[in-house]
Image (tube, rainbow, N blue to C red; front, side, top):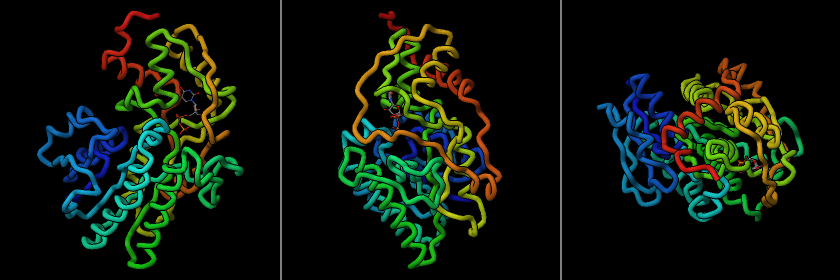
Amino acid sequence: MASAVITGAAGFLGSNLVDLLLAKHWEVTGIDNLVTGRTVNLAKARQSRRFRFCRADLATLKRIPRADQYLHLASPASPPAYQRDPIGTLMVNAAGTQRVLESARRADARVLIASTSEVYGDPEVHPQREGYWGHVNPVGIRSCYDEGKRFAEALAVAYRRRYGLDVRIARIFNTYGPRMDPQDGRVVSNFIVQGIRGEPFTVYGTGRQTRSFCYVSDMIRGLYLLQTAPPSVPTPMNLGNPHEISIRNAARIVARTLQIPERVRFEPLPEDDPKQRSPNIRAARRYLGWTPRVPFERGVIETASYFRGLGIGRRVPR
Ligand code: UDP
């Protein structure tokens, strides 16, 4: 039986990955300091005798348990969350990543590093392929996350070069779905919550900027396939849905799908907001046989039903 340590286990992606690994009969230890993660996300996992949870900060945790697989997802990931704690974000991706890599080296284990499409910054190459080096402002408001993840990638490949460690880097593009924090400020969760509450959609800037949204079950399957692929698998690897839409159009689709009137409130575009983003997933297709399956409309319905289950929308609409 495979044993795994997952950092960021109580988060949106972490907790969904925990559930998948438990379903595959792995033994899983989850670590999370609950800065952005939520224990409710682990309610299902906690029913399993193969799951242990450790509430701890990677920086101060005395000993990371031994395992044969490490999956490092710990980090704030939404722009408002990482901008609230820029130093913590940099450090979990720097010192935290080093602790995970050291533990894996001692255990001769395999490591997955959750990186991000943000390593491409505001890209000048479109769609983004893994060979593109990116266009990142090193001192902008997003740099704590972008540069933190770029450092994590650099450290991971340094461990591979120096020690032959088996590391896999997933560059995760925008992902949404059940267990997202409805208040984390990301666009899909904002629009769905606003739609359910009968509030206007907050579109930043003109709304002409684009993103490509991947449903969580697709992403989790991709991460699992990457982690279990043979050591020859290329890294880093993009994981995301290549179907690109403008933010303005995303608002339209959410309104139409939830069958609510579409009202939009334009707000200023945040600094350094990438103008376009879409993954080239040729490598994931070829080496993992992976391609996203869930259309945006279906994902929106599932996510809305999750948010309604949390009690969102019981407030009287304004
Ligand atoms: N955005 C928006 N309204 C919102 C939240 C975000 O128009 O309520 C925009 C944001 O400016 C960006 C895109 O939607 O262009 C995606 O933002 P998100 O925070 O979800 O993730 P990002 O891809 O920027 O990290």
